[in-house]
Length: 262
Image 1 (cartoon, helix red, strand yellow):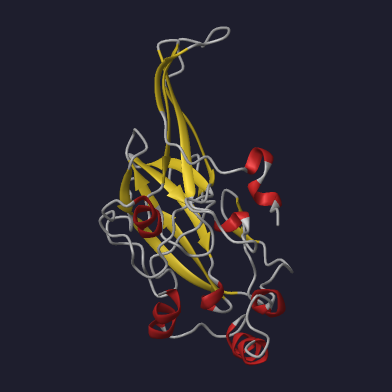
Image 2 (tube, one colour; image 1 turned 120 degrees about the vertical axis):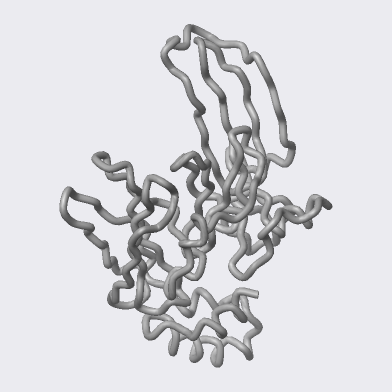
């Protein structure tokens, strides 16, 4: 059975490469000095037929530009516990905790850190300037309030006036609460507020204005029928019943969330 998320331009690239002094067609302006980075899902192992591209292990690609030259290209897996286990490598320090995932959605730099980010509550991963994995990042111990529990969002917005990152983080295990946070320019969260919304939305993004944060409480929510359709037939009804008592309602106790995450 073929899977459209594993074909063509979305087919996995399993080899990690490094190249220097790249050939350039045309001219790179001499004033450009930095890295061009991108990230996406790239499963380290062959997935089964139910694979969805949201679930692929993250791989980050980068080109270093300086002095009118393309200095290097590199691509590296984000080394979560699953990735290092699959590659037969020692685990990255701090990996393997509940919610651990090889971030695959966004990559950015803030407060001197290169961060790989993902949706729905998994922790960010810090990378080196050369894209090797440092480990999960909790912003100096400040990420992990009652609703964050170590998770973050893939799409924070930078305040152009202050350089701070504003974020709205969600997780379906948190019921009808999302978390708004402000990450300071020194790399620590200085404000964290839990906000009650309707249902259990996949709150992919939000808007940031000069004075307000605007939440999109959209009608795109977690569907218990879809979530349980790959389960054995006899288990589906009780599983849907249990999920209907959690999703879109009160958040679960931390001990229960940690057990599910494991």
